[in-house]
Length: 490
Image (tube, rainbow, N blue to C red; front, top):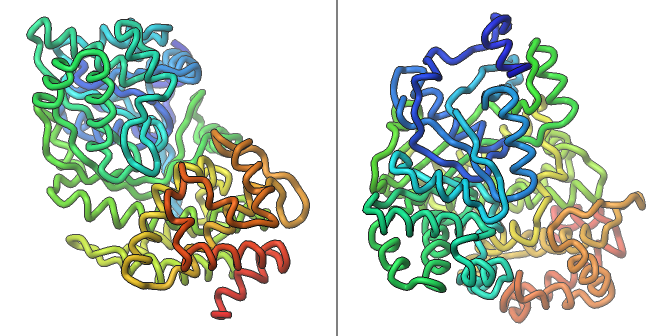
C-alpha cells in the first residue's frame, strides 16, 4: 500500500477525520457496481457514518464494474486500500474525511466471472448500482426494455459469460436460486424517476430472454426499492487534486462534494439493510414525490442553464448563476413552467426547494462544470425536461421557456459557441446530434424528428411552433438577445 493508506497508518493530517472503526473486522454485505465519484460521496459515505457509530460492521462494500474505466478505478483504489478522501466544499471553509466503508473491488474481466462469483456469495444482501441515467437499456420514448440492443442480444445468447452488469446479476441470481442461497435486494442509486422500477425491468426482462423461470423467481423474490439520491459531486481534476494537496493528503482519486446530501429510500429490502436513517437518510413510501421534485427542479434546472451557459462560454455552474441572463432564465422557467408541475413533499414546498437549489448552484466554492451538467443530453432531456413539458402541455400551461431550453440544446449541438470556439463532443451519440443540429439550422423540425428523444412531441403544434421560432431567433439574434426576448415576454 502507498499514499493514503500509508498516511492512515503514519501521518494523516490532524484536521482530517479518519475511520474510528477497525476496517480489518468489517465483512461485506453490499456489492456496488459503478464506483464513481457520486457513489463514494453518497452511499459509501452514509455507510461510513454508520460504521463510525459502531454499526453496520457486516455491511461493508465490495466495488465492481464491467467497463474498461472500472478497471482503472480499481487499480487506483487498490493502491490505497480502497480508502477515499471526501472534501466538502463549503463557502465557510472546506473540510475533509477519509471514508473506509469499501474493503475490496472485484477484478474486472471479460465474461465477468469474478463479479458473478462475488454477487453469488451468500453474505451479499444488496447489489447497488450507479451506471448513469442512460445505462438501463430503456427506450427513451416507450420506456420499455430495449431487448434489441446489441449488448442485450449478446447476453441473452451467452448468459454464463455476460458483458453487462445486468447480465452478471442474472447469472449470479441463477446460482443463488439453484444453490438455495436466496435472493438479494437490487438498489439503483441513479437519478432516474422510479429507479427501482427501471432496474427491475432491466434485470427481469434480460433474464426472461434466456430463462423465463428464473425471471419469474427474480420478480417474485428480489426487492427493487425506489430511491431519490442527491449530492452535487464534480469530476476530479487539477483543482480537486490541488485541494487534497493543500490538506496534506496523498490521494490518487480524491472526491469533492457540496455541503448537502439527501437520500430518500423506499423501505423494501428482502434480505435486510443498514439503518441509514440513523445518519440522515429518509425511509418513505412517498419517494415518487421527492424524486419528482428533485429531478424536475434540480436536474431539470441543470439542463435549463447548461446549453445557454455553454454557448456563452461560461465554465462553471456558479459562474452561470452569477450571470444575470442565465440566472434570470433559470428562475423564470422554473417558476412559470416547472413549479406548477411539482407538488410539495413533507417539509419542503416546491418554492422552498427551488430556493435551496439556487443556493446550491450558486455556491462559489464549488467548481461544478457546465460541461459535466451538459453531458449526455440525449438521456437527460428526456428524463429531466420532457416529462415537465408533457405535463404542461396536457394542462394547457405555457411552454415558451421549456421550448427555448430545447432550442438552446439544439443550438449547442451544432458544436460552436457564440464566439466561434468549438464545443467538444459531449454525448454518447454526439455525431448523430451534430448532424441533426446542422439540418435543423434551416429546418428546425428536423431536430424534433428524433423520435428516440421526443416521441410524438414534435407533432404537438404548440411546442413545435414555439421551438421553431426560438431556434430561428437563436441563429438570427444570438443567445443573449433571444433569452432576453423570452425574459421580456416578447
